[in-house]
Length: 473
Image 1 (cartoon, one colour):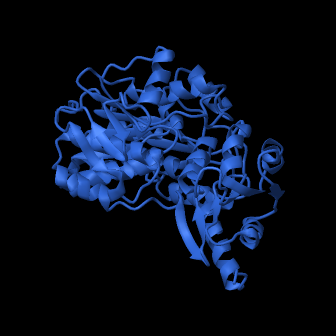
Image 2 (cartoon, rainbow, N blue to C red):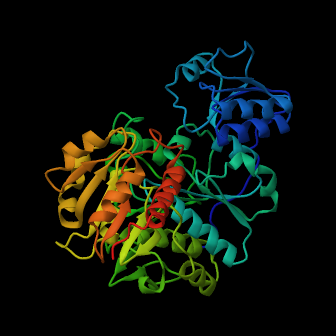
Image 3 (cartoon, rainbow, N blue to C red):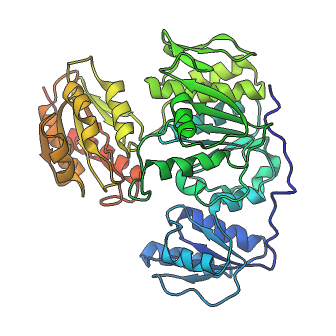
C-alpha cells in the first residue's frame, strides 16, 4: 500500500531561462515567484494594484535583483510575455488577468510554478477547515518516521521559496487553497487530501458549486496509481456534481461509520487492510472535536499509504499541540478561559469552535467576539447553536450590524469598536467556567493585516485587560 504515486519529472519541468514572465501580486507568494523566476534566468516584471510603503520596500528589493516592478495598478510594460504567474489573492476575473489570457499568455499560480520546479513528490491537503492542522500533522508523522519533508504552500511558506531545497526531500507537504487550485496546470500530488467542504469565500465565488469545483481540482491530474483521501461528506458533494476522481479513494468521517476510516466510541477505527480495527484513541491526543478527529484520520491514512512505522506515527500525533490562532488558550484568569480562534474565518469554523468549547448542551458558557470583513455568508445558520452555547456576542468590524441582525434573536448582541473593547466587555460579564472566545466568522482585512495579526491583537487585549487589573475577584 506504500506505492503512493509514481514520480516523473519529465512532464513537470518548465524551462524558464530566457523567457519573459510577469508576476501579478507582490505579497509573500508573488515575491517568492519573482525571485524564483529571476534565479531560473527569466526576465521578470512584478506588478501590484496597490502602492503601499511595504510594497515600495518590496519593489526596491526586487529592483536590486534586476526585476522590474510596477505598482499602483499602472499598465504593464509592453512585451511578448511567455508566462504570467498569479498570487492567490488575485482572481482570474481581474481585468489584467483577462487581458493576458486574451493574448494567449499562459496564466498559472505561484503554487503551480513552484510545483513545476520541485524535485520530489508531494502530498497535498485542501478543504474548507482543518488544512493547516492536517498539513502540520502530516509533516510531523513524516518527520517522526525519519522522512525528510517541509510544510509549504498556503500554510505560510510559499512553495517557490523552497524549490531549491526539494532535491534533498523525500516529500514536500503542501497546504493548498481553493485560490491556488484555480490556476493549476500540471499540479499532480501522489496523495491528495480533501477535508470538509462548507461555505467559504462566497465573496469570490458565485456559489457553492463554483467553490467546490475549485477545491476538487486537486484531483484533476491524478492517475489510477495515485491516492485520494476524501471526507465522506465531501465525496458526496463531488459525486452529486459529477466531479470524477481517477485515483484510488479512501473515505474518512467522524460521523459516518460506513467510511474507510471513522470515529466510534471516541476511537478512530479503520477498514484499511494494513491496520484494521482501532487506529488511535482520541483520549490520547491534545486535539479535540469531530473536526480534529478527521484531521487526524487524514494523517493516519497518509501514514498507512506510505507504510510508516506505526509507533512513531502514534507518538507524532499524541505529542502534537494545536496550532496558534485555532482554539488557542491565551490565558485562564479566575476560571475564565480566553481563547484565540482568529483562524475561524467562516461560519463552519465557528461552529466547530462552539461545539468544542461548549460546557454542555443547553448550558451556555461562551462569550463570543466575532465580525470582520464580509465573505458573503448566511450567518443565521449558526442561530440554533448560538442559543445553546453562547451567553452573548460582541460584534466588531465591517459586518457587525449584519451579524447583529442575524443573531440577535438567538443571543444578546453588542456592537464594539475594537478588540480591546470586546474583550473588556466580555470579561466584565464572564464568571468562572465561562469562555471568552474570539471566533470571527469573517476575514480580517477590514481592521487587521491578516488573521495572525488579529489573533495577536486579541492576545494583547487579553494581557492589557489583565495588566489593568480588571479581573474578577
